Image 1 (tube, rainbow, N blue to C red):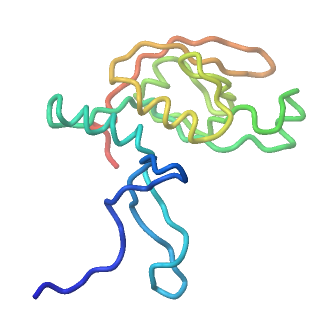
Image 2 (image 1 turned 90 degrees about the horizontal axis):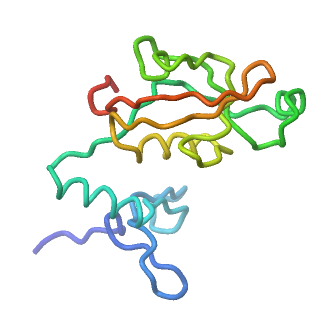
Length: 161
């Protein structure tokens, strides 16, 4: 007889209407049981990854080569931005697509490929969902001036973790 297992990792996450909206990945429970805070991957992301794997057996993601941080409330006020608008580039990786495009530490990313960037995950996901070698535009605020910069992404799979 096989031991029983608890949990639903890898199982579907349903909304109130019974639609699958994600794939369960983990649960945080202070008591170690099955009651707690659940984490899931959105179903649209799973669909994209499965399609990518079916295509050639690999998951290819775009890579920009920046470390980012949230834009503080004080910095947003000084720059004339709304709180929660844009993310700040903390550092640029040497020999990265960001470095080749001329992005600099201190630049505030306002949009990527035409999509507004309000949170860290907005930029991270937008870059990852673009194909490696994709050419696109990134809008930044640098020293009070808006700049639209052309960038060609690299391949995240070829970078050290």
